[in-house]
Length: 187
Image (cartoon, one colour):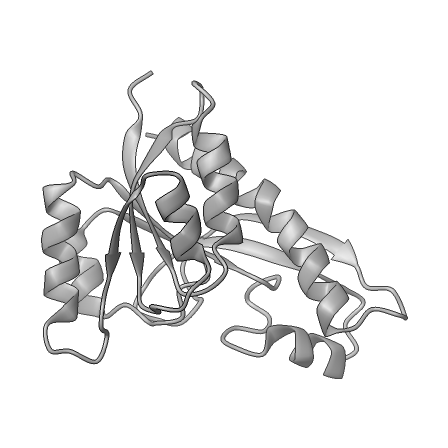
C-alpha cells in the first residue's frame, strides 16, 4: 500500500498525534505522518514529534503571511491530508482553498452541538444526556464541515469536565483513525 503523506497540526499535549503515529506504523493504515505543525512553543506534543523523529515546524501565527509559510512547507513535503488535532487556530478560507486537499478536524462534541471552545463546560451546563466526538471536514465556518465520523457515550451523574475530557479522548483515539480509513476507502 502506498501511504499518503499527512501533516498533523497541534497546539497542546499531542495525545491524538501520539495515537495517529502509533496507528501509522500499521502497514494497512493509509497515511504516514511526515510533518507536524505547531503554533505553541510550550506544547507537550512537540516532545512526541521529536521522540518519533517527525519533521516539526513551529509557526508564529501573529507573524504576517504565516499561512503562506505553512503552505510552502506542506508543498515541499508533498502533504495530501492535514489532521487538526487540538490545533487552536482557525485556518483561513484562502489557506483552505490554496491547500486544495483534505483537511479534517477532531472536535470533542457531537456536532453540530457545542461548536467552538469550552465544550465540556457547556455540555454539563446544558445537562446533556449524551456526548462524544466528531471528525469533520474543515471549512471556513467553525466546526461546520461535512461530518465524516462520530462516536458517543452516555453522561453519568457524577461526570465532570475532567471525566468528560478523559472519556471523550478515549473515543477520539478510535474515531480519528477510523475516519482517516473511511476517507481513503472512498477515493
